[in-house]
Image (cartoon, rainbow, N blue to C red; front, side):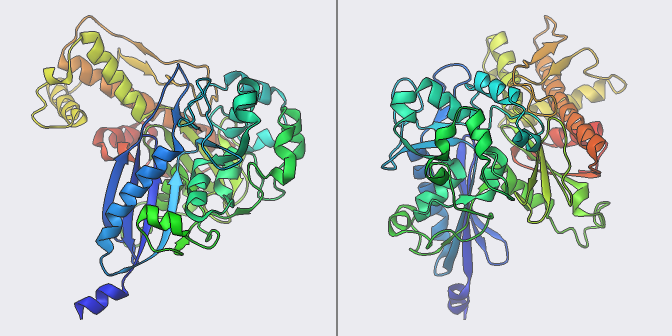
Amino acid sequence: MQKEKAEATSYYIGVDVGTASVRAALVDQSGTVIDQAEEALTIWEPQPDHYEQSSDNIWRACCVVTKKVARSAGSGRIRGLGFDATCSLVVLDKQFQPLAVNAEGNHQRNVIMWMDHRAGSQVERINRTRHGVLCYVGGVMSVEMQPPKLLWLKENLAEDCWEKAGHFFDLPDFLSWKATGSLTRSLCTLVCKWTYSSDYGWDDSFWQEIGLEDIREDNYSKIGNRVVSPGVSVGNGLTSQAASDLGLPEGIAVAASLIDAHAGGLGVIGADLTGRHLPCEDQPITSRLALICGTSSCHMAISEEPIFVPGVWGPYYSAMVPGFWLNEGGQSATGKLVSTCINIYIQWNNSPFSCFALRGQHLYAYLNDRLDQIRAARPRDFLTGDLHVWPDFHGNRSPLADLTLKGMVVGLSLSRGPDDLALLYLATVQSIALGTRHILEAMKSSGHRISSLFLCGGLSKNPLFVQMHADITGKSI
């Protein structure tokens, strides 16, 4: 009887490609996670603000983690596969081979990462056009989107890249193509990062005005002219080659992909709270804000009608939750900011992490405990009253939408003990939470009515990060 039950069980695999690693999960038909695996990714930073990856390296990592979790299915049947990934730009030549996005001609590095800011002058020129499509990205386009990256390639690597390029993919769409051989794109990626409209498709005048009229050739074949909603089955399922690579059955369904943050947003903003006795249980889904907090943070809110929020991306129709408009705020550096501030302090002290009595703890857990001790000794002291962090070390994504902004720390002293690091860590987390409050205030002023925050991602496991967001925003978490 047990064997028959195992054989009847259906499983699904989700592959999540983040900034620094790939994770896979095996999930049964009731939604229970059976197994998980993770594999690190390689990142190149050839010069300041240039961040590159390898699509071959990413695919190999996807294969490693998928094979690991697939073994846990035993005699059960794996019926489907889905990908989400960062909104990085993948460049292939006309023969679908990796094409260098760098002056060195290193074809292994064929991915311009989402966090890459090389196209600063290009995005400024795009924004000066004040073209109508910009109304749907908060009024100004971000350097993290794909049109400025494409324009940079055309203006800087014309002969070596632009003229040889056959295909430009958002990373999530590259993965579904790699799995199925289908050039079908996801509505999520094209609407959120490429200016595609779910109503009328591509806007010819936009590409003409920004100097990328050649993208229009062959009905936009290089960037996608077949578009489906996220989750729709792509092509004819998993190809024989991809099946061999991934260790999965040939022909199983492959879903149209999602941007990683949007996959997280879909998962938490639609959470079923029935019987949980939480304040937000009986409130509409439009009162929730999904906060996906990892290397960077994304703030997702949905509405039944389009809401235009200056400095906040969107409104995007059906890009995350079908039938709803999406607004997406964000912070370009959160997890990266916390680790950077800690590393700056450690390097300033010229001492390694070993100088702290961690006793097997993660450094963040150690610092949280240290802060508890400081609070106990100074119960009436506002600990960071004289220490402030401005968090825009990598520009401001929302709502100021200014990539030129820089970060700063005010209030440092000559004291360099463990308590000083703990307080700098606290001030950094508080600055991130204050940035979230700024985004919430901008959304509220335009018509959103957010009452609760739903967190996911690595930083949501940090109790200090969660508590500061509750304290500073005044929202239920």
